[in-house]
Structures are given as structure tokens and as C-alpha cells.
Length: 236
Image 1 (cartoon, helix red, strand yellow):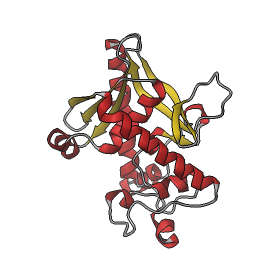
Image 2 (image 1 turned 90 degrees about the vertical axis):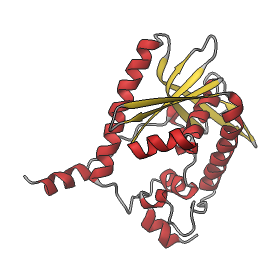
Image 3 (image 1 turned 90 degrees about the horizontal axis):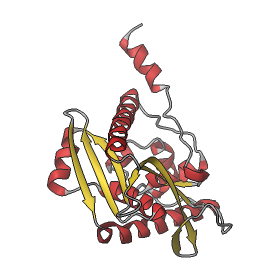
Image 4 (image 1 turned 30 degrees about the vertical axis):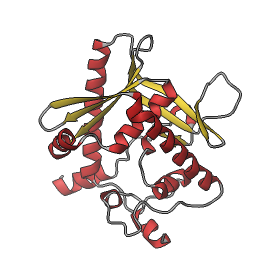
């Protein structure tokens, strides 16, 4: 065995494809993402640019960090719930929390909150993000990444949360930062994002693809997109 052989073997390991909450077509983790990429995911389009072993290792390290932080949160808030499930349903141009006991339709967006606590007082959704030192320090200076806030916000809408907390973990140095958000800082943004995602799904049901995030495909999201080649070939 050599290192190159092992790297190729790791690259052949797919990330586990966890089902969306309530088997909804859309996930909260799509928040802030490229509409074209979401369309390919909905189509189950074969990847033309598979993830490298570096990305797969990084994702799995992040998953391990999530589990540790969730366990710590459970100790702090014994009545809280890890991986709390919620759903959102698009009703025309409105977005509403989905009630599993209601016969009004299936959820459009499924949400897994990393942690949910305080349901009797100030219900709070916690989203955990692990990252390298550069991103961690940048957040201290410029604030959290918008798509992280939107992802937590979708879960917040689905679960009826008042507050959001983003837990940032510097996975190289063990530093932790917690950012707490009042409803005025996230609820309207999350609602607009849910409407956007519902529109992307509507295009999918009509057999259409939305335009890419960047027509020139120069943003960092394009660099790591598993469908970059097929997207480029499809044009804008």
C-alpha cells in the first residue's frame, strides 16, 4: 500500500446521503446555495467533478466535531433535542411550518436543527459549523456567513424558534465562538430564502434548471461543485 492508493480509496467513499426530514424534496442545508446546483441534486444528476479525498476527510472531521458539540449541548440542556426535525410547506407565495398531523400536503423543505432547546421559554435553534482558522477569525471581524444564518433560519421557522445561535468551531485550534440572533435579524431573511428555494423546486417540477450562481463560474462555490463540468456545458 502507498499514500496515493489510500487517497484514491478515500476519494471513492461517498458522504452518507442522509434523508431529508420527512423525505422533503428540499433541505435546509441548500440555503444560500446555487439554484443550478440544487436543480442537479433534485435530478440526481451524476457528478462530473467528484469530491477529492481532501474534501471527504474534511467533511468527516467536521461531522465528528458536530457530534462532540451536540453531546456537550445535551449536557447543558438535558431537555433539548439534537437533530430536531421540522418542515416548511409552500402555500402559493407563503411559507408556513408544516404540521405532520395536518392533511394539507407534504413539506417542501425538510430541516434538521443541530440542536433545539428552550421550547417552554425562548425556543432556540443551534447550528454548529466547524471551520479552519481563517474563516473562524474572519467571522469575528465581519460576522457569520450568510448561508449559515439562512440554514439555521429555515430550521428556526420550521420549529417555531425565537432565537438562533451559531456555534463556530475552529477545528485546528479548538476555539469556539457563539453568535446569538434576535428574530429581527433572521426571520424575514429566512422567509425570503424559503420562497426562493420553493421556486427552484417549482422549476424542477417543470423540467427546467435555474441559472447558475455565477455565470462566469469563478466564485469559490463553483470550484467545489460536483456538477461544474455539466453546468458549464449547459451554459447560462
